[in-house]
Amino acid sequence: MSKDSSKSSGKSNIPEVGDLVLATVNRITSHGAYCQMDEFKDQECFIHISEIASTWVRNIRNYVRENQKVVVKVLRVDADRNQVDTSLRRVTREQGRLKIQEWKRAQRGSKLLALAAERMKKTPNEAYEIAGKAMEANYADMLEALEEAKEKGPKGLTDIGVPKKWADVLYELAQAHVLIRDVSVEKTIELICRGPEGVEGIRKALLGAEAIVEPSGGSVFIEGAPRYRIQVSGKDYKQAEQLLQEAIEKSLKIIAECGGEGKVTTQS
Image (tube, rainbow, N blue to C red; front, side):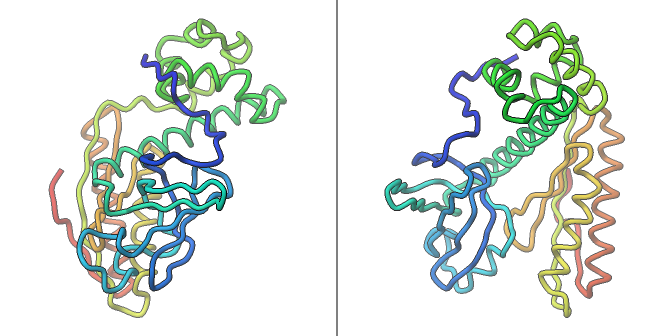
């Protein structure tokens, strides 16, 4: 169990300079990209063209696209003007991978807490105040609290202040929905689609891979078009490898059907 007393509850309205945040690209202009910040409600940020990549950017759309999720670093914050300037090029591949992994874990933990709220006939906000806040204060995230509860029982939750009835419900949900992952495998694929579907064909191929790996906690990461990394985690290495291969074959099949081509570029 790891404790992070400075962990945010996700209720802040604006990030701080230096923060790494997850954002979704809303619109692209000739001078930069405007994004919706996933972790900060109703907050937009801007990536200037000079902060898109370390090399000269001739066409922004070669690096980002609408609806793409990106990890950016906060450079400047003007709270009075509600303006946040960010950088994509100053985030390393590993930083981006870890941030997306952190966000996905937070999403899964929140969904399970919401399920507990339904059972206890409470709102998600009430559930957070009753149980979620204690879980975040004593663990790296709520999902880690549920992972430990699955292995050791509900007592770990009651020991940190979660009411027994809530701890019992969360334990039941952890038994049903939490997968303890010990191994991780990954490969990088290259996808190119010059056919009529273009970027849409690539999106379909990535969504196909994502649909296979996400139920087990896997992810698809953009390393920098046209390279995409597929990661799968699991308790059993052989099963994780099999799932990874299925995801790769699915994406390559879809890109071929869309008139494009793909290949594996690195081995796990």
